[in-house]
Length: 110
Image (cartoon, rainbow, N blue to C red; front, side, top):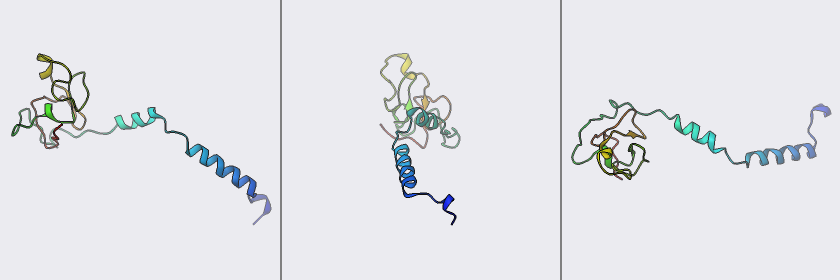
């Protein structure tokens, strides 16, 4: 091999140290959350979504249900009482508006 194209031991060690330093940097949260929000959701038809409960199981009691203005895993009320607790919310896994009294095969109790 030509001596001009070979790495010296010192150059190789510097490159190895630089590579280790760059890979130790934390992954930016903004990139992590941007990729997480682009996860496709299932269609209502593919999960056999119904607007009525089944065997006492309903979306409002599922850990994936997100009430209007709330967070997943809070249940139907999402910290609110009154007519708002029956307003349609969303789901972490299924696309579109979801009735708190609905049901699908992805139901997982809180």
